[in-house]
Image (cartoon, rainbow, N blue to C red; front, side, top):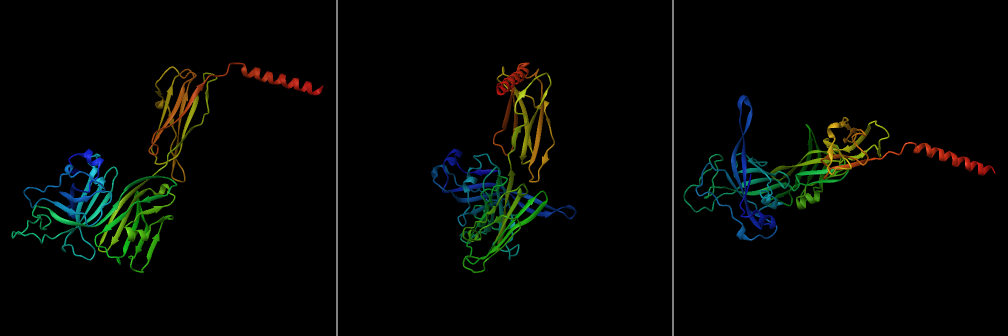
Length: 434
């Protein structure tokens, strides 16, 4: 749950902050010994305090309440205080506004061992994952502890009971954000056939210009998975070049933007149903390697139409209406039938009287389905309107197709039309023979 120390949510929505403290309720996750040789993940309540999180525009300081630490520091409290001025955290406003927008923030913390270091080495490192459900930035942060050498007190610092690390005089574990991998759009829906961009990037404190950067994109879906892009590129001041391996036609990442701007986004040409799934963006730079997940959902709205052009009852026989939903994705689609007699202002549902075909899957992965309804003249007089209404994830509003029962032609009219045609034909032949 996100706790924002801002006095008025409406003010926070109307304006963004230049610097604000954001407090997150998190879980500290540890791997522990389980029964029968297995393992368990123990969760301990923790707090993550992002200090002076930079915002894009002004908000009156009178509307902000800074983080206030506990009055009495406790060794059992797990409070990670993070300095975020060292690296940029993109889309920080979404963290600030999540509580006002009633969005849940999932925050998890655990120990982290950088490459080339020992597990107990100092400074200690931790990794934090922050995800906003329902939209918003996704973050993975590497935190590095900051020594409290400037403390003037002769009293030994309070040690955190679980981590056995010294706390600040106000009871927090001081850390610095040294590496951040993020996605501004961790969930994306796109239609078949378009080009898509999966957003991913990173920021690193004190990165060397000669430092090489590795980027890997992996795809996973329904138990399957594969690497679709692997890139290794040298720093801007080296001549090592870039190595790229691509295993899905039409995907690319820009090595120049990766080094210069920290832009690790993946471009995908001509999306297909088979591209749907979970994409894992893993970035390696120096001693750090972390990842961010992007969910891609493929959508395709159905084409909805009726087989019949009109409804005319010539006798008391029922007629069949056929409503077709073609080439949609994903699978779920809802079909309703409605009728509205000419004398009524409200529609009547006929859905329970209708039947459905089985789903038909095409070679491109899309689906089709048909719905059938038998209607009788005794129940539906001329002027009655039939509506087939289709709802689907890819449709912003339901798609309606309609038919109206027409008045049948008078009996014998067809006979007289034929007779008139024959008479005119005889007269024409008579005139032509003279």
